[in-house]
Length: 420
Image (cartoon, rainbow, N blue to C red; front, side, top):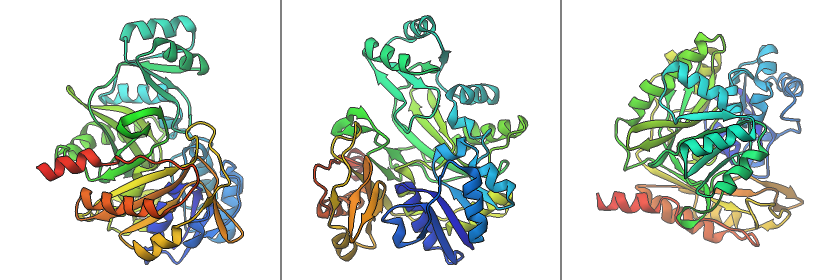
């Protein structure tokens, strides 16, 4: 199989790494990719938001499968253009991707499908915003209706901060605060069959102890030793399958990766949000544990034959990923700083620990930072404690001036598992 992956982040590096290990994959391409992806795939320049250009590249390469990584190309209709060219594509249509592209649309779908979620108001005026904030009280949950690269949500007890964020949004969803831990659960679907993956938990705040500003995600781990063993089965029955069925009923079937962001509340499981693609950094740990070859699963979803794929096989090992971010992230990050120590990780820690590139580029023989989240250092181990040790050992080998990372990724879960 000749595969083309669209995107340039650590999620795409994780996908490319898994695909490169799949014996079915005979050629692997990525556009535009990054310095790390270049080690496992041939890179091509393309405007990832230009469906015609992506379809033309896929045709030129003779791709038998295109995997669209980020949300923005999906919402822009890139998967539609590739499908129109007669090439199988893993990723929803523009209309189906509105599950992520519009939080108001997602709320409407959930209401129709009977999916449990937070009570909410969709607001477009200052008066509506005030009424909604008053109705729910603190802590305030204020969400930009559209795409915001993981930074469109503000959860705050400060009503002025809530108002200020709402005022920046053309349309805003204000909803009740959901208590309890958050879980990310991905599912591969062809629009009918839904195949859930293993759950993961990510860390959205910049600093240890869940302090600091909201980010795109500073780390993740899987499995979740504290979660109900029947969680996946329950979410498949109450959230994932009903949503996929409702999308098909509307004439906009959802094919690709459906990502449910969940809160395990005192009143049961509630959906915080849907995404229309693999999550970053959760993908890094979920794929680290997946033993079923990836390409066949994604192709079956693209071709509508997912029912023929048997249960997925998973490693019993745990996986942890730690994000190394640029100076000043998630503000305006500094870029262009040299990244060293990558060869040391490859020599000393592989294959149990490895580095997935997010915001990097190559300048001559050097790798330099090119974004806010620069690297996802990922490790596996017999349990979370061992995976954490390996991940942080590898992080300590990496040198990037002014960089930052959290030191507590999966710490509480590892401690709880050790006590159990």
